[in-house]
Length: 80
Image (cartoon, rainbow, N blue to C red; front, side):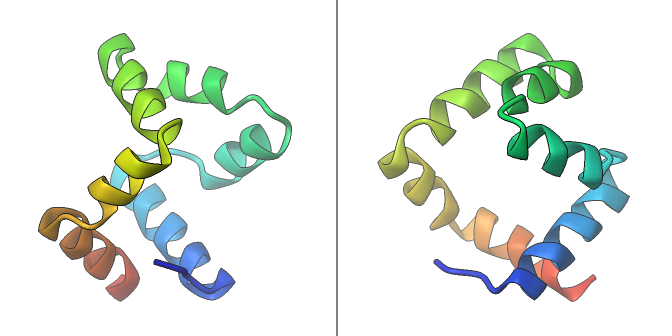
């Protein structure tokens, strides 16, 4: 599943609104290689561990994104 830059920005903006997470801080953390620290501050230790595990396994990430729930979430985030 590939998204355009415009779609990614829209998803991030809508996710930010719904979660209260500052998208710019998240982008900066990812670009600077500090995403682990950022995730650790935003999520519970258990949720952080699960997310890191899925993101580090390409097959698991693809499987997660192909679920009906993930597709519905992405659809809603793209709608805004």
